[in-house]
Amino acid sequence: MRRPWFPALLVLVALALVAVGCGGDSDEQGADVPAETGPSAAVERVELDGTSALVWGDGPRGALLAHGAAFDASSWQDQADQISALGFTVLAVEDIGHDGLLAGEAYLRDDAGVGDVAFIGGSAGADSMLSLLSEQPDLADQVILLSPNRVVEGLGTQPKLFIASVDEAVTDVSTELADSSLGDQNELLIVPGSAHAQNMFASDQADAVIGAILERLDSPS
Image 1 (spheres, rainbow, N blue to C red):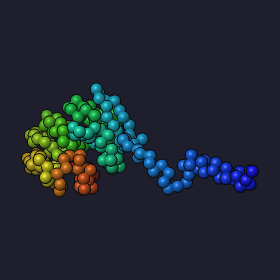
Image 2: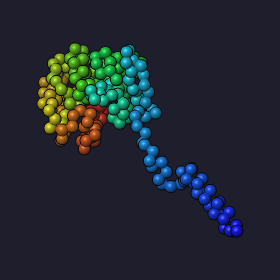
Image 3: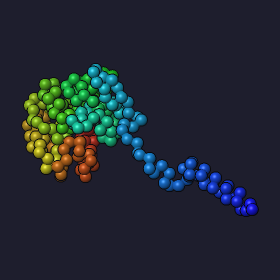
Image 4: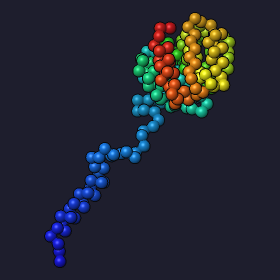
């Protein structure tokens, strides 16, 4: 015998299936979808001479970023967003050797048309920048280095900021560079902990480190 409520039950089941298929209006909709990672849609990848780089912003000042050995250009995403918000064109090179740095500096000045260029590097990227600037000290208008691993001579008189963690193995390198480099605008920031270079941005000192970088960049040279 056909039950009178049977068609209504079928309708309710069908509506429930449609709601599930469409995701419904629940606050949990999409909760198990991974968050978007990697460079944001605003980032542009450009081809340089023999390498490539990521570019953020289009401001009148330039910032050249060189990552550490365990990182790549996109690892600067969060910091580059904040630096570009100050009015910088920010370029992070994939090749952190001298050729890559020179190509990045030329792109900022010639293609992007910026005035001043700040060199910002971490660990291996910082070392490469130091090596290049010891040969061409006037190449950068500002220098900001996280956890450099070696001391060099011959740097210029431009403003410099050296950042390291108090308990990492190379803290004394930043201290010596700040003390021995030419110029009267050399600054030293030693933060608590043992995080090395870009790993500071994943530590509880992240705000202090990026805050010091932004303050240095926004100060008159």
